Image (cartoon, rainbow, N blue to C red; front, side):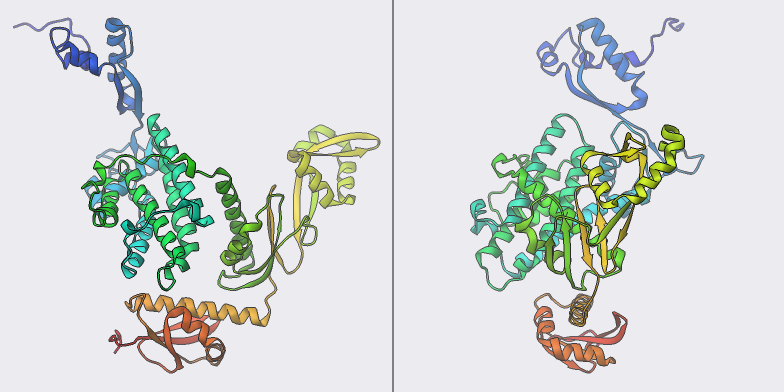
Length: 536
């Protein structure tokens, strides 16, 4: 038979899908009405002139409306250099290899967080490896809970999370959890994926690196006092809720966490996390002021760490004091900041003049064209003026006013170059709302305490490397350094209490390792009592 000369674009077959799949209008009218228009469609950007267009064109012609409520456009996957993947270029990535090495969850997580869905993605094994760090942090937090819940035989079904009696750290992470639920739910309702995924990542980092790290001693406490129960219940609530929240994003790790901490314990729990309801935000548990306050505390701690880094002082080395210049109140968090930064004293001061001085210079690029020959006079005025007073005026008003030959001139931030000098004995970190100055002078007792903290850290590392349980009692041995031996003799009780040691003695036994502790070479050994040591 001769072919038909008039052939319509084949994409119009796909464009007829909304009604053709039901054989409408010839039958199935109810089914068509119930499912039209669709909530959303999704395809890559190349369908803009294909399926997306023909769907819209046919539906508009026949039904006078769009056939979908939302259209999620996906960008193309490129190689790590931004080039289109092609076999003949040799720049394709074998999906099976990626899945085998990093898993489906890590691969999915990369696409959620790398960029907005409609933008092209530069895909590589390195990119997936980087995104998989989030899953590692989540898994380590889950493993921490399982480890200590197992040691203490903690059963969350025997307790209740009593919000009224919770401490500030517990209330903060519960508030952050409910803020996360609210944001994620609202985002998914709007078909947004990248924004909630990134906030989930931020929450997991805060849960691990702030809540758990600052609450560890509560889990290590002997017995099962109420504060320890509150810590367990708070962390359990966060992990159980988080597993349900992330199930649509990373289904496999969510299922594994749920099965082990919820399904195994709670008899009436659904048999899969994917049969659970999506978490509901408890708005009464959101404390916006507490979240804001804790965010500022984290900023202070971050500035303090920056000061330590600039002065090359480790966190395990105590320092005497730190000054904080800010208008934001943080009194109730002083002890938290001291413990986190290993600082003996936090001092609030109204001015940074004692440890920081400012010099303001004209920026030739902006002021040159504006003032020309007046520039040298402006420069002279800035040099002779009180730099700290000028800087304060600039921060408060966004500009400074100077008088040059009787003419008033306003200089804005972009017109000026700001140079800072710090006083001797301080490391300083500063921005528009916060200045932190860390005293860098170390006394002999502080240095000795730093040695103690380093020794404790090394022994804890060796316990883990030797395969000892966190509850195993041990003996500690040291040899090869008189200074370290003196530290053990003076601070032995503290070291033994921290590392669960019954004995610390000069000699060599058990699992041994050479260390350089603050420039002092020493050999340490750990031996588990009543357990065969790996080196025995």
